[in-house]
Amino acid sequence: MLGNYFSPVAVAVSLIHDYEKIPREVEDLVRAGIEKGAAISGTLQTANIGIEKIVLNIVSNPNIRWLILVGPTSKGHKADDALKALVSRGIDDRGYILHTRAPTAILKNISRGSVERLREQVSLVDLSQIEDPEVLKEAVWGCYQQEPTVFAVQGREYELRDPGALPTPPIIERITDRLKESV
Image (cartoon, rainbow, N blue to C red):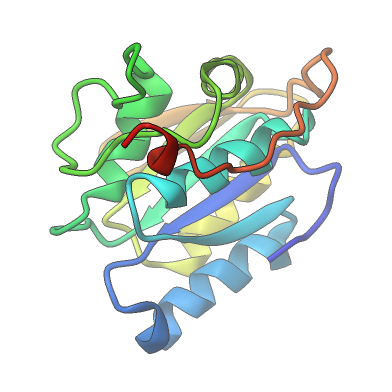
């Protein structure tokens, strides 16, 4: 879902269910992000194309400076683990996300430049294993503040504030089917 373009926040809700069977609780988290003012809020199911879409949406909007990961821990695709590893460690020369347990964590359809821009542009707020829309709303609100605001939950602590837009132009890139090209 798209929200406030000028917002400093993007929300990724870990999706562990089939896309056709998304439970109400996941929809509530996606909606809570938008209602509190996120620029974009949606689900993350796979450690490849799902993450590529997140990267491209974020780097196309330099206002987004925070990425909030929320929701249940993925046991299969481990997309949540891959997203955390991507933000903290990046990718290797072949597009594999470094130091993740995700079995399919390869980004072949976007440029390395977009990945590096994501890593420069956003800080991650890890709310994985949290499914409470009120906690998510509090985190989104904290990212809007001009003065640093301490946000703590389940032993994790973040100093949130809106640092302003990244002073570089947006990166506009399409996902291409490079997987076929490399076969």
